[in-house]
Length: 194
Image (cartoon, rainbow, N blue to C red; front, side, top):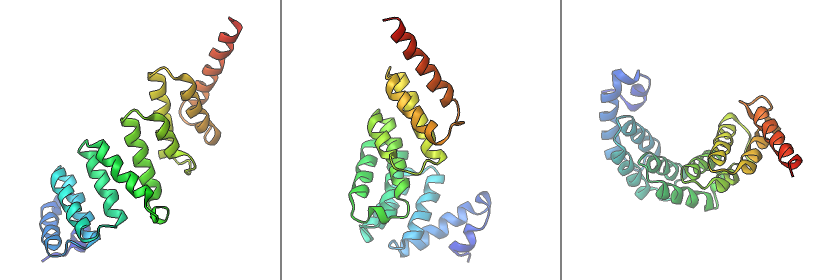
């Protein structure tokens, strides 16, 4: 019988049913195995069975209630299910945890929180989640998206703050230089017309 390790190395299409069945049997016997719980939940998500993924993670959490990795994956599943407020609550609990800063994916938690806050229309708080983070492409993409959302709701000054944050670390990122210069020109024209 193939093991979980050997099934992971096979192409997705070839072994997906075998991997799912083997992982489920293993998980049924050992729900406290965090690695397999996360793996089985990810297989469930690939099969578009979000309900099963949530049940798997919640069962893992009943065995290991303080596990940050399981809590983070629960938040991911809740977001996939469209349950943003529950997802945000899980992420807030993770961020309040004393061990939160030591969790190896602390920035992933903050990125997911920022994405949820953007979807919820809470742009100022989304920006705050990104403050102090390394300005990698993912963070720049989110700041850019927040800037676009601010423009949609008529808050050009706030959008410009996002563009300037990006510009400070990546001058050539998308069209931020053009947006900043256009915003500066609009302000000068507005001041001259007064």
